[in-house]
Length: 297
Image (cartoon, rainbow, N blue to C red):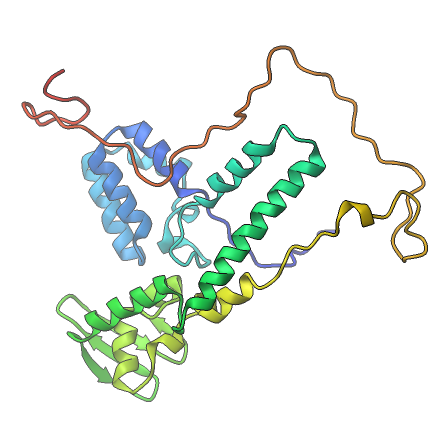
């Protein structure tokens, strides 16, 4: 019997890893920059135009796309919503926490990580309580930029919910009931784009109220409102004492598996953490203007 999936989940790979593979394969800074433009492209038409630009530089990108299809890394072909997130920088912080205490016994190590999470929750809970806006600061900034851009657009109202937004670049269709814009930024990022903001302002609506709930200060406060309480070790139930309190009683103690210590000194860093914040600096020769070396060399 086949098991049906419980949740409809869409998966994408870590774009940073894909970009590093692309960089190592072609070793062309211009190609890498166009690749990132293709990653952020919101429509298939814009994405295909970037692919054509890359093919004009190197025809070998066709073979690379066969190994890494756009459905795994391109926003234009992703069926889910990434809300503008393409990296997992938080994993580096979590790994550093585990690195500081990985030599401790398992109970002490978990307690160390729990304390770090408790401090993390406390700091963000206090920061969220100081905010007085509807949306978190990063979302507020994006809405403010959209409002500024919307002032130069011409709004043509088709009916109660549909609008035609005319700009010097192109014309977009907005449906404020379905929260859809033909540029696809609203539905992919969860925040009203400049086109939808212009439509909302024209009919007297507050653009902040049309953002996804995850961007609100209320949602942020709910995220970090809970505690991670664990009672002191002195009040833990001993083995076999859980029968009266309703807990599960274990007659046989659980022992760790037997392992054989490998030869050599154990490594302190078992994983290599890359710097995910800034790309590596590419030098350019001042004499021949080629990349990869400096004039001194």
